[in-house]
Length: 128
Image (tube, rainbow, N blue to C red; front, side, top):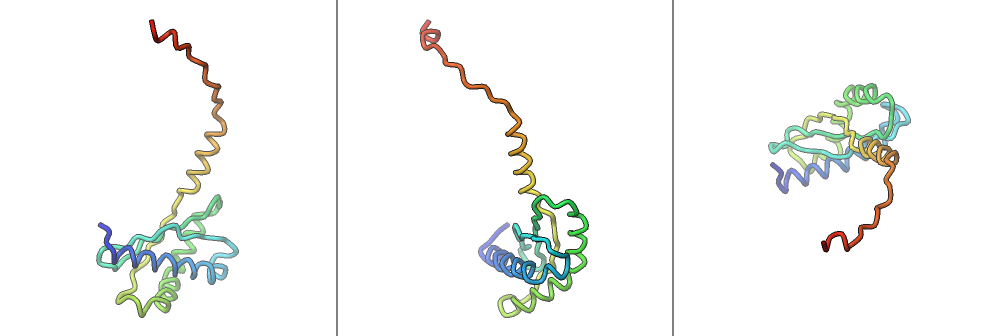
């Protein structure tokens, strides 16, 4: 169930987390560009599910482990940024968003399909 308040907090968290990942991510997991593709907040605003996207990166499990390892530091940095806007800083749970990879895979599959041009249908065949 989504409401105005949860949508507003989700947007705020997504924006602030994106900034945190951009500014401090290099120190945590190296020179890797991770995007925050979405944030969903529970109705009680106590937990946030953060969806991360790493386009075509091979060591995703290691990166997700590093993000989870630094979860407390990320939450602490988030708390410093939004403490005046929310009462409770939500617990963060990180998930891998593979939507972009699926899009890329589908595009590659579509390139392999050999589509033959349409044959012209004779209108007289339908009049009979």
